Image (cartoon, rainbow, N blue to C red; front, side, top):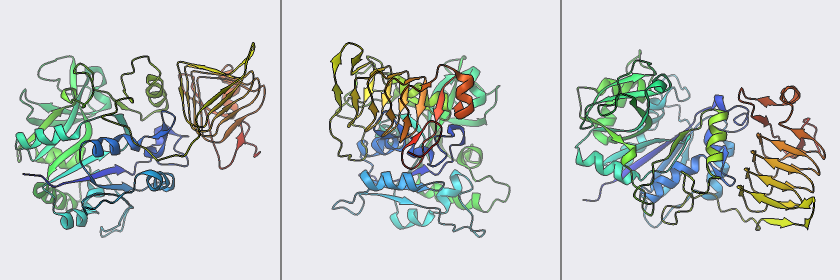
Amino acid sequence: MQLRVLSFVLAGGKGTRLYPLTKERAKPAVPFGGRYRIVDFVLSNLINSGVYSIYVLIQFKSQSLLQHLSDGWEFSGILKSHFIIPVPAQMRTPGETWYRGTADAIYQNINLIEQTDPDLVVIFGADHIYRMNIREMIEYHVQKRSQATVAAIPAPRSQAREFGVIEAAPEGVIRGFHEKKADAPAMPSDPERVYASMGNYVFSTERLLEELHADAANEDSTHDFGRDILPAMVGRAPMYAYDFQTNQIPGDPRDQMAYWRDVGTIDAYYEANMDLRSLLPALNLYNKRWPLRTAGYQDPPAKFAFDDEGRRGHAIDSIISGGVILSGGAVRNSVLGRGARVHAGALVEDSILFDNVDIGRGARVRRAILDKNVRVPPGEVIGWDLDRDRIYHHVTESGIVVVEGKRGAVDVAGLQV
């Protein structure tokens, strides 16, 4: 029997820990890997897994995300079940509020479930970097005759306070949830690790509707799946943890390790981008059977100009996107977004450049993230004197400098050019 599957992508988070990258955009719209956006990962996973009925729930600072979805993701096929539709907060609750939690976001759109009448509802977040064959999780849910299945990834027990931890029996039955507790129980097979919830769920539709209505009527609830709905289901309905480590991507080697990163902080976001530079990256973007899809930008090819000593355009161990021109500048261990320019004598190393960043002649940039349209004037230095950088920019505790972007090109002092 062909199951009818409806998917909701939760893309409404503020992403406050990624500030200032989220100052003007929602976290799912933050660029990643040169030409992508964070939201591209969950949408690609769904489409590659054969899930084509997708609602994207948006909320805060959504214009950038809406533009990205419009540029490359909205589609409708011959079948009415093929769609990706962005949905703003409907304010269908009595208080006419924004989404109060993950469960409330689905409840405010419960009419979409009732109209579609699917067999299963898939609910995934839009703010993590990972590849996942969601079809395998769906098959696991059906095989176990589960009413709710939660994707789980093993994490060191020392990090238990950072996650919602799933307490599970050896066969996967969920026995409890422990929200960010240092003493959360370990995995049955490994006393040094815990099962961390990935915030991705598969529900049987009838059970989900029952739980959403009950939660909405509970005045003491925070209306969140991890804090309220799932803990309340323990012992009342079959629930299972799906081990993400068992997930197999078509086209990947059998021994390829599953990759998932919570890029909730600047440092974590920076490291995930740097992962792409490896000779054999843990996150494989080159598997043609599992493409990472994005907007169809009409960029010209990247270009490397000049071969003179001291004025040689070259890049080493780096990701270079379309439209980039290295005009006598050097790039090392970096990720360059679309249309970036690196002029003669300039050096960019261990850095992330968003779209249309311009690095002037002789400028040097190290361990930095430059937002879109930033212009670094000739001879400017970023990343070598952190005390000076803190006067003008955001600097993390680990020493990563974040230079904010604005509409139009701006220099590093914030002056319109």
